[in-house]
Figure 1 (cartoon, one colour):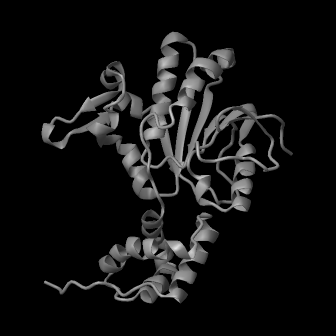
Figure 2 (figure 1 turned 180 degrees about the horizontal axis):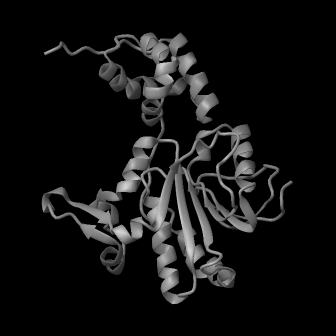
Length: 285
C-alpha cells in the first residue's frame, strides 16, 4: 500500500493563480478570506492525483490535458451546491396562486410555458418547479410547460438526472406530493426516494457556465429562476449576468432571485412585483 500523505499548504502565489482563474472563468468572488476553504476543498484532488504540492496541481489543471480531464473536477470542488425542495416557498406560492392563473391563456401544447432554472445544482429546484406545474395542470388541463435546469458542475447535474434524494429532504412535503411524484427505495436501510420516471422525463438538464458570452437557447423563457447564484459574484458581474439573463426572458416574463439577493441600484429592465421577483418591463436590443 502506498503511504498516505498530506499535500502542503496553498501558498499566496498559488492562491492568486487559482483565484484569478476562478473569478475570471466562473465569476465567483475569491477574496483572501477564502484561501483556507479553497485549500481544504482541493486537497482531495491533490491526493487523488498524487501531487504533493499545489503548484504541481495548478500546472496540471492549466495544461491542455488538465483542461480536458481535471477542470470539471476542480469546478465541482470549489462551487457551492446547496438546495432543497420548495426552498424559499413564497416564490412557488406566487407562481401557483397569482401569476400562472393570470396568464394561463397564453400557453397550450403548441406554445408551452418555458422555464429555466439557472444554477440548478442537484435538481431539487427543477423538480419543485415540475411539481408546481403539474399541480397547476391538474386544474388547467390544457396548460403545457417545459423546464430546463443548467449548472456548471457535471457532478451535481448527474445527481439531478438520477433524481435520487435522502428521504428527509421531502419530509415537509404534503403527503399527496410524496405519493404522486416520489418512489421509496426498495432497500429501506437507504432511506432514499426517487422522482418517478414519468416526471424525470418531463425535465432536462444541461451543463452551462453562466459566465459564457453566449447561451445555447434558440427561444426565450417565460420564467427564469436564478436564485442564490449571483450572491457569489461581485456587483459588476452581478449586473452583467442579470442583463444577460434578461436577453433570454420574454417581455413581461419573470426572473426570480434568492431572498438574500437584490437588483437595487442596477440599471436593468425589471420591475419588482413581489419579494425578489422581477418582471421584465422592456425589450432589449
